Length: 308
Image (tube, rainbow, N blue to C red; front, side, top):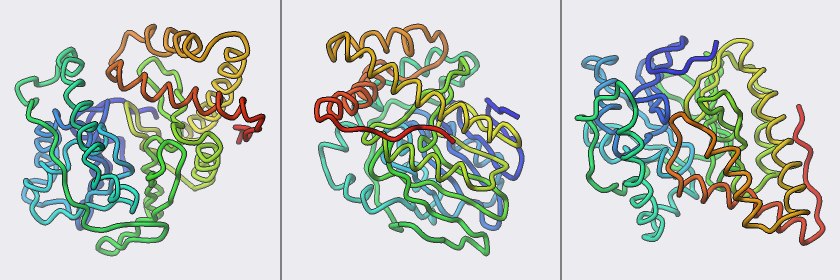
């Protein structure tokens, strides 16, 4: 099954707030959260979590990385659920100490509001316009296992999208919270590779996660995949990664760096009529993806093959 809305795809997993950039809730004793979505949508996440849990409260919030669309509502959720403990990587903790990083998260968080206003059926009165707030990480995690009331959460370091990237696997339920470690499928059904800092590491991370026994896969945006669609998604994501590499290399042989970006943007972003990230955020990500190949090509270096 490919699940693309709020609610539950099964396994005690809930997509809260909005499927574009959700807070995932895993019900249990105690319940736990994964990701913190947009700052502007903080009250949407709060509403859905409270409706599901009633009088209960989540114990942990696991963050994959410190991008603005994954950590936006942390401060609000910590206020609402006062015993909530935030888990993230050591690199994420270091990022939060940099005022330049906080300013950038705040800036990009503000730019998503017009895009949220365009979503039909979204309760616009619950959106907020206050600036993003920094927060404290309560538990710094690396490779290993975190016990949550007897439920094992395995932590994997999966760099490639970012250098602070973690993925979380719950073996008892065969659920993987991979976010951008394995790519994203947009609302058109097109897989978009998500390496920003290192293509080779991204491929290694995706291959590593693809070998886990997974019944429910939770990427960072839009869709949750279950059953046989998990394997199908990994295969499509790796194929899209390989095709993107070949396309960029071919374009860089013919055109300038800037023209290569323009052409890929026209195909990936401009032609997408559905909900999508702000143009500035997309261009930041695309530029880094193209830059990686441009620099390797200039140095005469090779790269890994993206195939399962």
